[in-house]
Length: 331
Length: 136
Image (cartoon, rainbow over all chains, first blue to last red; front, side):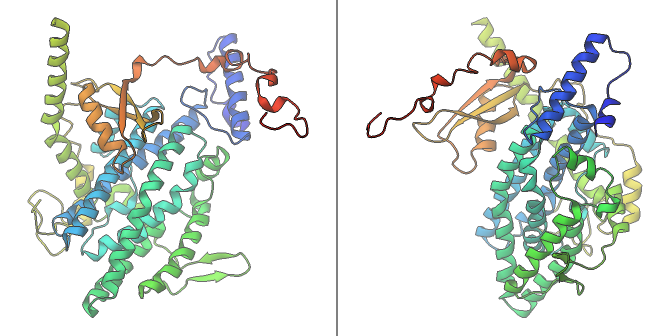
């Protein structure tokens, strides 16, 4: 790690600047070694800043795009109660996106630039949101599996070494637990309903099981950035470790639902003390991430449209603020 | 988007121009098309940044909750309410323009906060308790 960080010091620095860089580097490494937190105005290696910026902005984009599969069901929710719950959930996701954009901004990237990158298709977001939500039961499966996997991933991120990211994650995790419970409840109700409703719940679980396991990212031996992120205390556990834990949780929960996970290979390995699961289609994962998933273009197009539709609101608000300020100045 | 049809259902028709669900070919071709949007990109400067402080209940001080962008204080307050108090987290909100905050220099952390160091006698725990002495 040390040798790699030294390469981030540009060659054309004056002797004083080199000293300052070295002192910053030493301070950064001490903070990381103490498992303390880095704050926005601290010195940090360029690669650390870049890694965080990529991760946090992708996370923010995922929340914003993640509003779509569910917002799409608000008008067709089966009851007023479910409609109200779904609206609260979608509103939370907008909020989570904003907390994360704020955290990313502290690393020196403007929010407008991040928005532009998303709309221009230059930024990535979680592959999961490029799958369609085709039935009401998908609202249950998304809450239970997708939000469940997200929580599994996010709880350790509350201790990420970058202060603003950790603080945003604390807030998000607090709010997210209701998302998972309402999803579980939807599936439980369907499962205890008519045979057709139960089948609908089972089909939704079948659809979302594998994509939710892939949310943890590629297998450890194919995840080039993981080791560095763990050395920097951004990530606390590897992708496979978290995935295995998640399988262990849902394998019990699915019994209460009276449903089945579409994976005959799930078993607890007594030796490694880890949950094992069947093979996942990583080709599909790569394709979806690269923009060739079932809904990629629809999601981006919707985001673009919403951005354009909101332009007049932003302009009017800015103009109103300008006029008010002028009036105050004149008075 | 049709208000009551499911645009995500592969069998249903989708609005003209948008890609069909499940059509990988359509998705691939659309993703290679350059973006046509961001009409006002760079043409307006970003709204100012506000820091948000929330008083969680009467009798407690306002605590920093996060930040947001808004064109003016009134909008900042409304946005802060929606963003940071969706679950009754507050009874009062302050918004402060981020650039109005003066902060101590992070590079001077050592010297700036040096004064209290070695002055343990400022803490009650510095003093040895005498046995049997109450209320001290």
